[in-house]
Image (cartoon, rainbow, N blue to C red; front, side, top):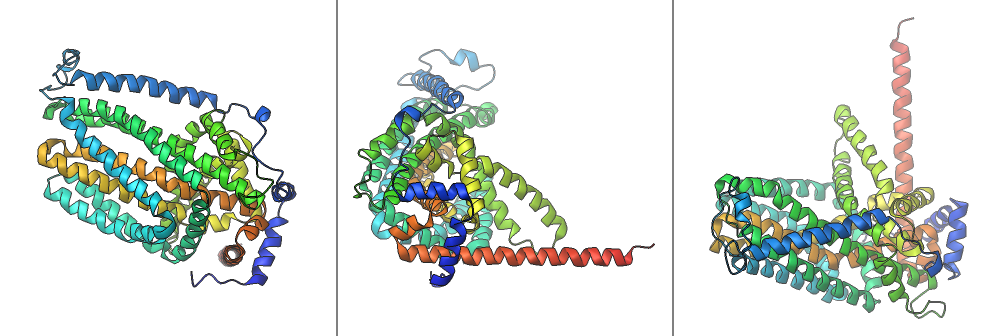
Length: 507
């Protein structure tokens, strides 16, 4: 944070520039500053993205029924429902019981919950240290897991963890100069969230809901593992059944995480817009209204965005990290630039800032994502967002929690059933990531709301924390200057190349 100065002159210039960048944004910001832009009135809220809401609910019902059947088939008695007669031609069915493997997933759920609740419990006092630990330890932990997997003769996972450790190490090297500003933003978000204890209770409640679904999911997953499929059918199961179960668990977890995101974003936006939670203009029962909108009219938008946002955002981080370290290799730079612009186009319609717009105005997901991105680009705040790595740091913490959870279940599985380590360990890791992610998303929601409010009206942030406002404005000024310098450099380089080409061409 030492390299983020607090120059009031540059912050005022950035402030005036960002406010005057677009007239519609000015009108919206004035409404926010006056406290009249709150959650949209109940009659104006319409159900959005209903198709994806239906798909998600059908998926839950069908998969929940299938998981119950798979778990019951091996519960206390082998082949209770006589399902092996449908699979004996393809799989080498052997005896096994659901309750043999269900405790392994219970351990994963318990470890993930403890890690998530520990994060929330120490959020106010130790969050900064915990995030730094996640950044610095994750690479080492991945490398240790790689060695451990090779020792356990799990060569696929050993190679996967080794590649992950290498890629993460290169990414941290690429963005290490951005970490001071990232920690500044995360500290401000933690300060905001810690002042709203009710949103912490929402995170605890959604963890319990996720645990209930994981109980059903792991019951069916344990039934699948209990099939004790021989070598002839094991990889078929991993490729088909296990991918279906994992994608379903990921989507359900992402939906719950983003529901918390919408609830917390709505609360943080209201607090910043009205100048504090104790302001007289603050609407009554605002948390309950935000919760009601998130699980009713806006739930379809949450289901839709949860399918694509995380994958696109992760791909964007990786491409940005590679792009910043390419150098003068024009061929490779051209290929990476093509991928970069393709992902940037997708980000325009799938980004996490859409959840703030969904919470505030109740618009559909694509509409909200497009409005948020256009707001950032019109005010120049997109330069700050591109420089900030808070989402990546929180993802590292989520990954570390998932890896610890997977390691605990994987070691116990290796002791009891060595040929089931990969199946149980991989899904246990996903369970841990989802549970820890439900704790991390509280801070991420505050970050997204802070950026939206800063783009809408920087004075909202100034009223909340003047020092943080000065630091953000100074960094925005630096990033805009950096972009202008790079643009001038590219333009000059192109002019020189064109002039040189014209000189060498024969008449």
